[in-house]
Length: 431
Image 1 (cartoon, rainbow, N blue to C red):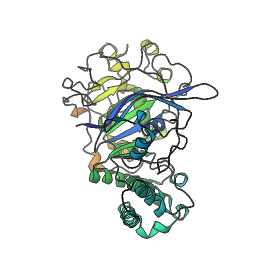
Image 2 (spheres, one colour):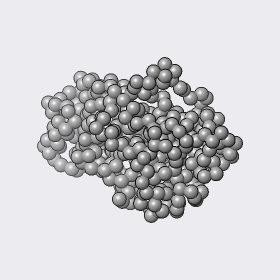
Image 3 (tube, rainbow, N blue to C red):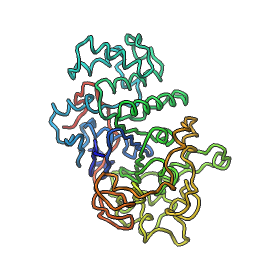
Image 4 (tube, rainbow, N blue to C red):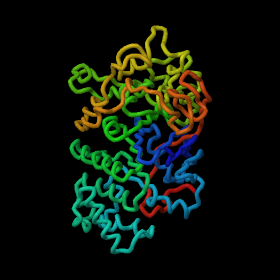
């Protein structure tokens, strides 16, 4: 399947008085039409910066490098007019915090119609008719077009943001924490709405969240970020059921499992703090906090290695020479998500539904079919769509899971970015 979006060696650096902050340090992934990708990680890991850099919505203090190919064109190199044509018309954003993203002195109908009219996708009468249809499609009565944001509930405002993102019929939607500050029932409704829209309109979608229960319900693939890099990427069911990176396992165990009093009464946290992104980081950035750290972790350059069908991990334990420590313990044994013998062992793993159930939102019919470790069948090639050896997905040029393959590293990075208007104006935009 041809990629709609290809991100290669993306790095973002923020220029700050106290020193440059390199919060995104060489990120690579692809996204096909109709596919959903979740970006997970704790606050400050670089999730929002990656997402906003895809449409150059970062503040003027950000310096971006790498390549972002959207429909074959490098977004980072587009002129202003071409970039404006892409924003909202071909790719749009559901911003975090609808109350702050919506204009408080304009009706929601005016705000939804604005990108339609600015991008020349219809007359005013046609825009009004489409606005009514969009509100109906997201579960807000069309008569609320004349309402102001403060007159709507939190869930209704979030639905309006989704309607705005769909206004120009884009091919890609970026949803930044779409369920933040919503109660569990409304969260479930918003997630079901997004899932249905992706399926019906064959949209590609990137969902940003620190909540695995949200991502488990909505995403085909997950990418876990730590200190501006990808720690792991792969199919959501496999990644949650049997993590191939200790950090992924720690995040998964942050959610107590239903019916498991041990995890509820004695939840496990993660000691320490993320590294200072102003400093050079030697070796694995997670090593100081990792319960499975080896001496080599302090020195070996971080990169994504093949870790199973359509999976990659930045943990050296997926390599044959580091498959177990001195005690024969594998990554998943300590980090959670699986019992037993190691990365290639038993499929007796925690069901992904248990993760989503912690928020009371699991769609059991869907999650029951989520792929697990037992589904490790030979893959046609790497996740990027480039040809590769069966059962050994990775980036182009990586031939087999047992290969140490060509390393991919990068420096550069940055912290969370700002927002952008429906008009696509370069507010706080560093050209």
